[in-house]
Image 1 (cartoon, rainbow, N blue to C red):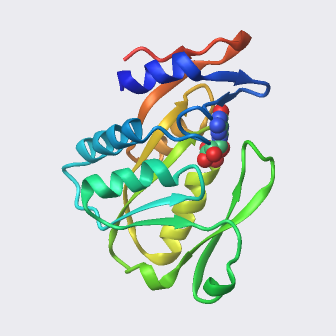
Image 2: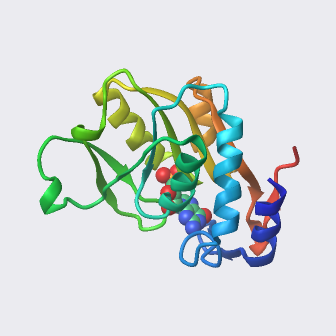
Length: 191
Ligand code: 5GP
């Protein structure tokens, strides 16, 4: 998605440990027009699928997931990382190691908003090692829901998450694929 690639080129900053900082338009300040186009692009790519819910993990997945759910006209659920007093019981829970924070979180989705057998689309802001998506896949398995695919805004293709998921037969659509962040330079996978 050229508009996204242009934003990464303009604002992306390479941090140590192969982290790309995109606080200018995705992870802190959020560009609503760009997010609208991201949502429309995911809706277009998964147009052939029946989708009942969009799932993501708080907090950086929420903006792209919400715009995708708007474009698909279905509700969005964000998995919570912290146990909420009002959402204590009847939760599906899985562990997800956070790449950027280097901590393990429990992520949870309330059983109240999940119907066994339904079709869900998973959305996240970044794909690195695939831990966040794996947490959502674990919840989907517990809940007996069918995952139609995974939409990632920025995939770091030099890290193994995307490849592993595709090898499992899952459809992963990424709107920008990063080939390398070596020497502080962002280079993209040519498509
Ligand atoms: P994974 O679970 O695939 O290892 O990592 C995905 C999660 O870690 C994303 O939800 C994102 O929040 C965070 N993350 C991983 N790599 C990066 C990165 O290079 N930049 C930013 N901003 N977040 C990242």
